[in-house]
Length: 289
Image (cartoon, rainbow, N blue to C red):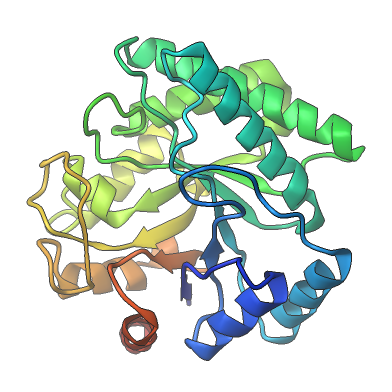
């Protein structure tokens, strides 16, 4: 069994997100704690967070997959961009200490001409320092697991290969020790890995074996379930509705049903409105049978 849901808006508060996800048939969901394009985030009340936690427990929800802002780039060439991105990362991790036991997912970033090696080092350093700062400010160990998202490899993106993600994890662990190493994982985006050249349509088992060899399947904590508008290896990152893209329904059904991917949250990021997400959640539940 997997958990299935989609992105919902935080604009009406935390408990409202849970109610929205339930209304769509979900038992997990994702949300941006701030505007997806950056900017300030609103601090929820203790009562609102407590109400969401009760709703999640009462309805058997899986772990949530909180998403960092798209504009966050802790490995940018410009120091000002790196500094602003670091503040968003630290602030998100600190704010989410009140919602323990879940996942915080982020795009690793773009090295903007510095090279992947420099980019992985900067990402690792930012993660280690942001965790230290959030723990110091909250007075407790990190309460959630940080997930690096697999990327399509367009432009100067870091994370277009499993090896680049492993480099970040290894270097961050060297800086933050075993405690940080245990709090780092990966979110596998089906569109991104497909666009990045991993053929999950014809060789899903082989892709998972490669992931296990390079990173370890114990680090694969969540899945973004998306079809793709582009052929395998296009490096373009264009999401499509389930079954309407180049990956196809049969291959995505195999992802949902794969025995090595069970008990994880699956998040839909397809181009849909509420009605479309409700239908896709229903479809995924049928695939699970």
